[in-house]
Length: 281
Image (cartoon, rainbow, N blue to C red; front, side, top):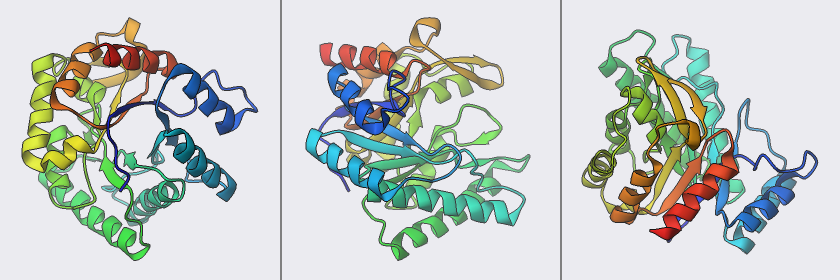
């Protein structure tokens, strides 16, 4: 595993100001100029990346000290009623992990499943069974240098409240949570937005999973709009009630190390706000 010695602030994908033909080379120049720490590679519709790109990412992250994470494709549902879709979901997660290992990535995340009207315990066991298959595939393919992380989800129809993610992480050595604090906030209808509530999550993770989970963290944050049903859409911090300042204070208190990925619609601007405030603490 890649060792991290601080909390790194990342953008979700290339900065929006990256020129159309600039690619990753221009993206990293922007990140460096802004004093940001890396980015999350977004595999939206499938895991496609050339060997040259992987080589470039590995080289620049090593040279410049950038941290790289990866988000698996959207088409993942380990609890689909169709066996082929479950199989394809496992494959996409393994492919994401393989790509991340190839380009020197630290961690991958994905939205694991939907409840599909089924009992929560039944769905948990299905996700666990498929995660076992994922872990076996990783072992078979010698993919051992990246953390595998189901992400906390923003709607009650999606599997993945933070307690479910912690529970699953206890079962597998290579699995840890990706805590999307905006999703937790939206899923609970506006709760989990104070220093004490953020500390409650971090304390629970620390208690249940040990110090390694705090020293190897992966989190998402954005401004967020939500209803009683949960997440509606991402917003910039200025337009939302997401209390990022208290979150950063809580993370500082716990000495969290790893990646905090900004998913606001203006990714690099809000990422810079996060970085500047964190450094000021």
